[in-house]
Length: 450
Image (cartoon, rainbow, N blue to C red; front, side, top):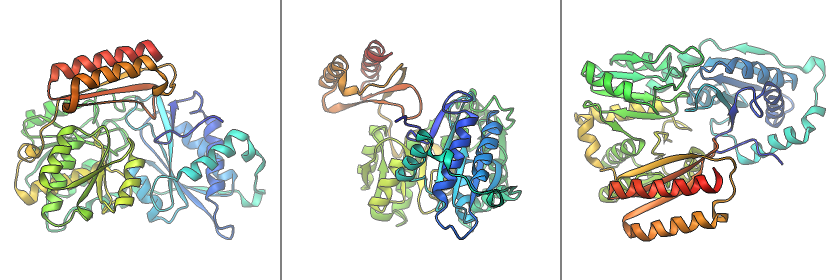
């Protein structure tokens, strides 16, 4: 059976299977069906999106599908993914659907689903939706005309989310006198982020806040921070905050223009939380992609860390198992479980600013908590995804490289869960060696599955 859901929902090129209007209609119908847990009440599903041109098409199709199953739709328009998770839980809706391809270019789009409690939908329910759609069984489940749902727009959803985010920042603190540059990636944070940081007192300069449907993530935001690095230096800002297209990631820029990854942010916040007795179970959850420098920093501070599989869903699952409230990825997708059920770039930024305000330290000083080990990451386009262990030449190349690195480096080769890419990551104390080994393994991948 065709797999629709990857590590972060359904994703693909807009208007090409599976991201077609027809498929969105079927997914809307199936989602509505599995969420109707109480046949005695009216059910509601929240739909939000980022700023992609294709969002209109998919939003309309999803709405039609959901209403055709006798479930009402609450439309919130462009809003960060974590804002839709919050709205779903806050409004006691039965599910929330986000139309976004996160950090991907505008040509792509995606669908991810939150459960009524604001967490990502379980594998069990995703599999049930897949089965209903792939087998066509959903086509034969139809309420009668008087049970068809209706759609309404929630005009104050953005305002509610703004208040929610601000409430994660200590009431006795302000951002008075803090010069902040925001890069909203022409994406879902373009309205809410400037308001939140300004209302807390920050002196805010915003860039890439003029979405046109096609410029989301284009040479801007968390994946392309060169513009914000220049702007921070130009205006003499204390910090730069770069979000991705759907607002669940954060990359920070210090006052010198240097980039801080998610690993830096985790290390800074983990130390601060431990010092103040706020780090539940003295544990942080990381992933195989986390830099060796983060591991060494956490060990030196005396913080335990456990490693989840790559992907925020896996990070969250292990956080719940380990009773941890801080976990995340090098990409800047960080979960503060004491504040939200999912990664939120704005909330992450507010926690980082809290550390700066309470310690009085500049961001460059805080970043010294860890030293990045040289790391090379290469993304290799692939035409298929055969199991990597079934490729003997690649496995031999990796074994040879591991023998060269010994105990002083790491190699990770894995397929992307959302794109037709194989990611090759190599880490060691020798930058030239790191680059050479990464290049050799990437070339082997190209020969085997390119």
